[in-house]
Length: 318
Image 1 (cartoon, rainbow, N blue to C red):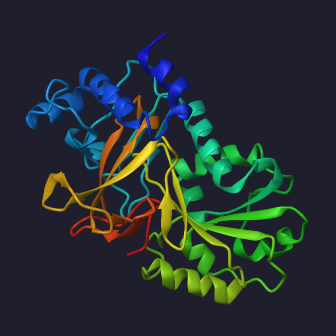
Image 2: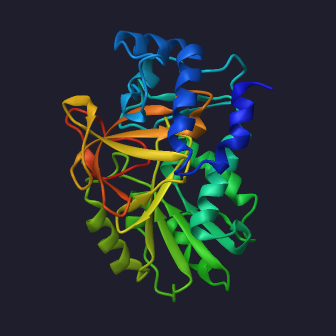
């Protein structure tokens, strides 16, 4: 059995105790099996022989997913996820060798936060993602629909209200511009909204706080969550009031903006690096262009985008 096959079996048992050792193990593997990442590490003179902690591991900038195929295995790719972006050219592409594993990790993450899918009606308001057809978010929601309660489906804003009339808890996955057009007059005490990101060029970008205030005013739904994810990751973080948490096999680190190997203390802002060990077959060490901070309780916040970076993906309004 290959290293990646064995590691995927162990992934969901990773915790705070063995996270660092697991990360260094994956770094060693990807250094030797991912040619793009190998060249990147060598250019920084960072090798398994010199790296002793996760803070010394090189994080691959997400721009590489635009110009290179990032793979750590020699096998066929089952799916290519592409970023939404504000332009149609030069989109990031994440080559997924094992789509079943992606779906398994996504389902475990969701159910850990919200409970069994079988007890939820999934209502998807994701028109811009559906139109593109190569979104990781759509693939995840499609998979959730296979397990969710009857009546789960994709909807348009004008057809949604009737679907909320049930005894089952409703989970609305919604892109921001669709949620802003949503108006609900019925009782919504059994409904949760999960907003998945920005306007996709369809309206003026606003802050998450403003967005949630407008959604509440129009729907009276007060249980509003957010999802943080991106094409280059296989895992998602969910959060309420802008306070996100990843599953145990993922960790966010905050780097100084001008020094990628210096890390900020808690509560200080900087660029977000993500170790996503579910990316074992691609690259687990991703340097994002998001600005954020880690709080004393271990949650993290996304504060915006770094200068000169485009607004894209299912992450955050600026």
